[in-house]
Image (tube, rainbow, N blue to C red; front, top):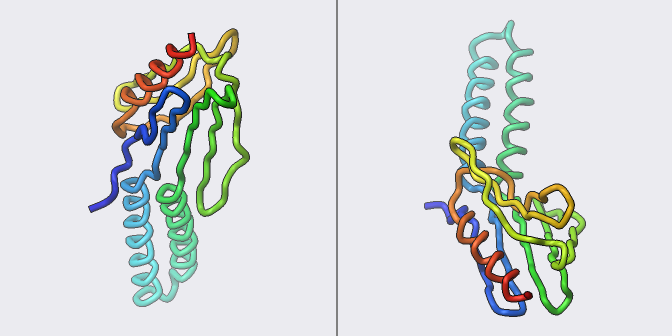
Length: 160
């Protein structure tokens, strides 16, 4: 069984709130299976169709792309830390063992958190003072968005 890919509140206190958007393991497994199927096609083309070797090489290249997407999906994680001590929200993302530069947003600029929904997906956004909304967690059909938005809004209410 795969670990949960649901968004989770890992620490909630009056001075600090930490929300983790874990890797999307299901998506990684799906892309991994597709990559294996494409490799099977490549082996079939190599073995039984000498004239179609170029197709086999293209299939191998495509499977490598799918494996890269599977690895990216299975390792991507975002941690959002709301801190009263620093007065900042720090958003730290990493994937494939490499961390992106942290984004920081002053807590004083954040009005509230909203969950935007479409037919099959949810997206967690922060509504800022006089600015475009900031996407905190990308759209997906995973669970935990509403709990995270409630935790953020509760945390922001305490500062007033």
